[in-house]
Image (tube, rainbow, N blue to C red; front, side, top):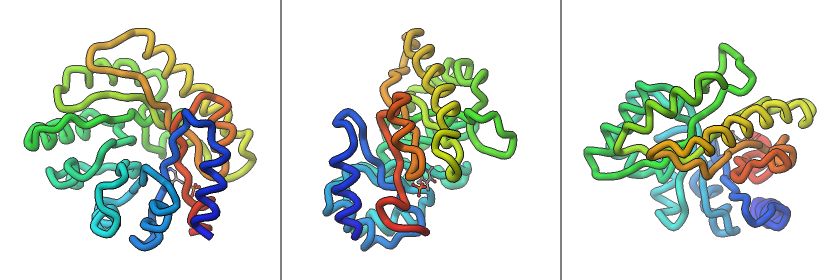
Length: 217
Ligand SMILES: *Cc1c(COP(=O)(O)O)cnc(C)c1O
């Protein structure tokens, strides 16, 4: 089932769009199955879960952190394991990633999570604050900003997600034109099972898909 789902999605995605398999709550064996079906990037929400999966799957794929980050989760071992952190949304977390990466001599590619719906209870930087935030991050030597990520609604009519993606895309383009030092606006990570087709129409080049690959949680 998993293999079939992966093959169908990979066949459907335009070749410039990267698939992240969102693996939260799945077993290491399920993660291994998606890797064997051809997935190149695993998205993890929890550090412990990621570690268990990584012990089974190994470093033949890239590991993206896509969960809510707390300062105490950002350890040297954590930054050593992940190839990208997609959910940077505060200076405090950025500073911690920078510090841990400096300890192990690594530059971490990061995406800035945008709270494109301006919902106070959600994580992410508000649209108006993204540019000043990225300007501050460009001073950190062990972090490189590689683009933006946004969530949008998980359920409901996929069309309802479009305005969230449009807002994020506009910020992405504007910041790209600024050519800020140590900032390379390359990745736009938007869209999940429900909304990835709309996200791609609006310029996403990373989609994060869970249930359509693994089944409902
Ligand atoms: C769970 C999750 C996804 C995937 O959601 P599905 O609806 O299962 O495809 C994508 N991004 C993030 C950040 C997630 O936590």
